[in-house]
Amino acid sequence: MARERKHPPSAACLSASMRDLGYSLETAIADLVDNSISAGASAVEVICDLSGKDPVVAILDDGRGMTGDELLDAMRHGTLNPRERRSATDLGRFGLGLKTASFSQCRSLTVASATPHGTVASEWNLDRIDEADEWLLSVYDEADIRALPYIERLDATGTLVLWRLLDRLAARNVRSLEGFFLQAPSFHDRTSRLSQSDRRESGGYLSCSCAEVIRKRSS
Image 1 (cartoon, rainbow, N blue to C red):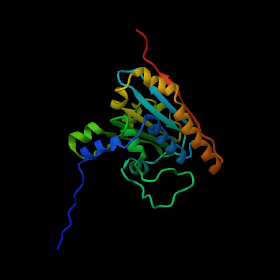
Image 2: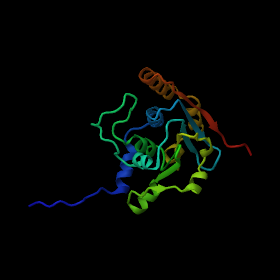
Image 3: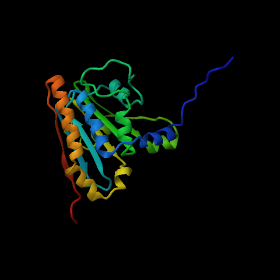
Image 4: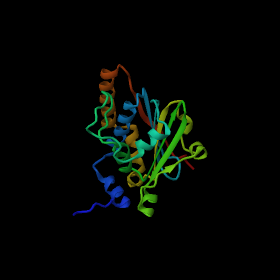
């Protein structure tokens, strides 16, 4: 008689494979805007910070936010069953978009989220996953959360997504990266279409801004 055994994939190899599923920078950011729409956001702010040694991309929204348990579910790979019935404004299907879209551009994904119950945050770091070959998620404490860039912009409810260790973006010329955030018609068209669709379904309005680029100071 055949026997069963647990046979999980290598975390290091699988995470590397997930980085090459065909996302462009535009579609990766648009996937996160999808999440903001599903969370009932009326405004999304996208920031490209080039002022430090390493670039940082931040996506902020004023949606309903997530509790600690909800954030852990959101950070899990394959959280949602695609066969389950969804609300009209829920654009996700497989529970992979946040992670795969982000990993296509960065090696460190941090998500902080605020609700009336408080603010929580967790991080996936691919360097740590590679080292341990395990899905090790960092769950932040209050001091860690206070040290996050742009955490002060998070409203009473809402979510902040941070892309750091931007190895895929760093491979591009910084000038072209800056130019993308200032002139991204395909991204603007994508988010405009999404906001119009969402408005028809729920009567809401999505304001999305991706024009803020923080440059290095001239010496």
